[in-house]
Image (cartoon, rainbow, N blue to C red; front, side, top):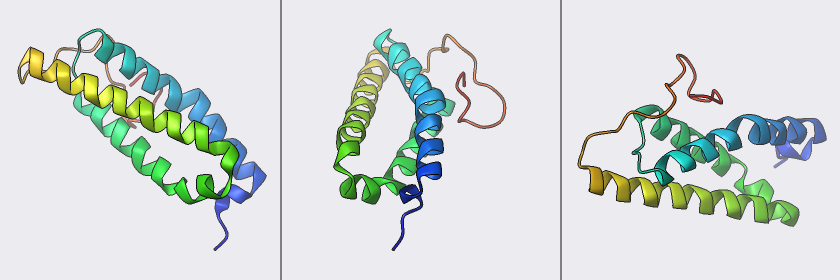
Length: 113
C-alpha cells in the first residue's frame, strides 16, 4: 500500500507541522510538568491526539530508517511527560494545578493551548 508520506510534499508539511506546532507544545507541557504542575484536560487531549497521529506514521518510520531516531525520541519524550505528570498528580492529590498558560479555545492542536 502506498503511504501518503512517500510524497515529498506531504512529508514536508507533516514535518513542518511537527516542528512548528506540535513539538513546541510538547516541550511546553514537559516544562510544565517538570515545574510540578499536573496535566490539564486540554494537555491530555493534545498528547492523546498527537500520539494517535504519530502511530499513523509508524509504518513509514519502519520503512525509512532516517526517521527512527526522531520517532524514538518523541516516544521517549511522551514517556517522560506522562511519568512526571503522574508523579506530580500523586504528590499534589487529585486536583489539577492551573497551568501557566490558558488553553486556547477551539482545537487542542494550537501551539499555545
